[in-house]
Image (cartoon, rainbow, N blue to C red):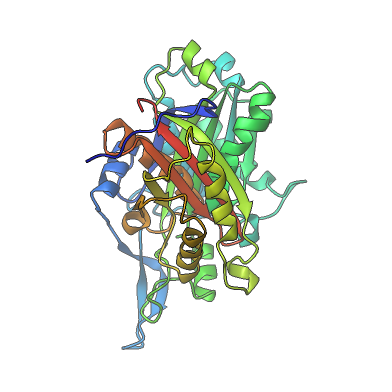
Length: 375
């Protein structure tokens, strides 16, 4: 029997009106989400990175989750641009959305791009905030290629890795709403298959290889959604796909690189904050989309957070997209949002509620709470 559907709280932070995604198991949001839900996975050997096989002492190509035939031959921000262009194009083709050249509509829209942390060393630090390279080499070419009438001043980068999507929603529903923006495109993109990323992960012993069964399998993806103020969406006649009803971020002191064992304090704080926004103090039993990827530190963080939240959770249905697409890094949070929306639309959510839970290796953690628009 389905659990009772809790009505959404009155303080909706924003509504999602369009989604898009490119992953290794689907190059549209519908194809990707259906494949992930069905447990489809397409791991492949990647020829540009070799690992040692312990038993034979031979070197073999790493097994990973590339978007085969799509990102081949691209590297660095060129790979991000390739993924982001396909994802964002899907959003811009949403029925009822004004054309990309509509300056009036897009002039009141912000673009928040979620990328890996600059602490990872995956891109050159340039400009006052260290992010000019991403804007110049990725976001402006992306905007121009799609003919999107979005002013330079409306584009920001959120370099907070896995937790960047939650941080972007937090910024949109607070600072950007107050500044007069009516909607925000949240675009998250990452590739752990870039040679530099693989080199770093290999040196840190984080890859899943023959002598490390608790490592991660690298993947790549882009995911995007349009978050609008509820009144703005209503005025233009857009039907919400989902409601964002809670968001929180925090800092885990004992993160992966701290040298200390995680206690799950930051993650528990995030979850407790978004769960407290419910219309009644009921234990959450909906869907949880987590970025658990097989690494021990993530499992320990999640487990200790659950212990701290025993009175707030009631056997939620936990989904692990990485089983199908590998660890997609900074794109994981936005992909979780797309999976939530897809489940709502097809009646596959048992309560019409979902949490998207994210943790960065550098300690930034985040949580989003979503409700079905029909709940």
